[in-house]
Image 1 (tube, rainbow, N blue to C red):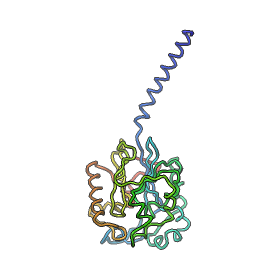
Image 2: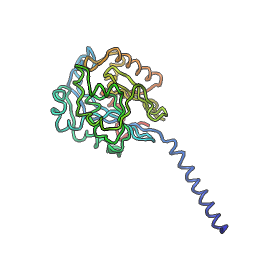
Image 3: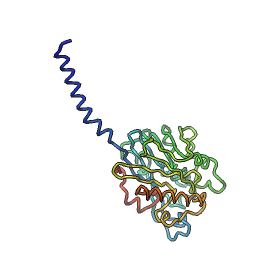
Image 4: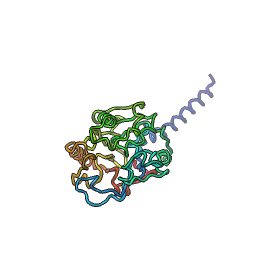
Length: 290
C-alpha cells in the first residue's frame, strides 16, 4: 500500500481522535436537568382542607409537575389535572371542580407545556407519580408509550379504594394503566442506579404515596414531595390533612419525618407541589435547575 496513503489515514485518525477527545468529556459530564411546570391551579377553598385546624382560605395554589432530562431518558414526575377539565371541569371532576376552584386553560394542556422545552408526550420514557389522585395522575393516559412507575399499593388503592377514600380517584384518569408498561414498587427505587433520580416510599396521604429526590451537579438535592406534604408550614409544624386527605395519620407523620431527614441530611431544596410561595420562587420552564 502506498506510504503516502497510510500517512494520510494515520493523520485523519489522529485528527478524529482529537475531536472525540474534546467532545467526549463534555458529553460525559452532562448531568440531569430539572424543569418545573404547573397544570392549571386551584383556589378559593378553606385552608382546613389541607391541614387540620387551618385558618382562612387558600386563594391560589399550583398543580405542579416536573420533567427531568437525564442522559438515559426523560422522566416526568406527576401529570397534573386531566386536560379534559379544560373544556369539561364539572363533567370530569364533578363537584370537586367548584369545591377546589379548579382553573384550567388550553395553555395548561400537557402537550403545550412540554413544548416549552421541545418535548412531546412520546419523548417521555418514564412517568412516575407521587400517587394517582385526580390532580397528580390526571394525564397518565397521554403517555401510552412510557413506563409508568408507582407503588403497588397505589395501583391497588386507585382501582379498589378503601371505603370513603374513592373521592379523589377518577377511574377515567388511569383507565389506560392496565395497558401500559409499569414498574410496580414495594419500597424505594433508584431509577438509573446512579443516585440522580430516586423514589422514596412515603405512605400516609394515600396507601402508596411516594416522593422523588433528584440530585443535580450544581443545585444539589431537590425533593419533589407530591402530596406527601401539602405546604412548608405543614411540614414544619407537623400538620396533616383531615380524612380523606390523609389515609393513615401514623404513616403521614412518619413520612413527614422522612422528608425532613432527607432535607436536612442533604441540605436539599423542597419543591412542594401545592405550595404557592415555593412555586412562585422556583424557576419555571423553560428555565431549569442543573
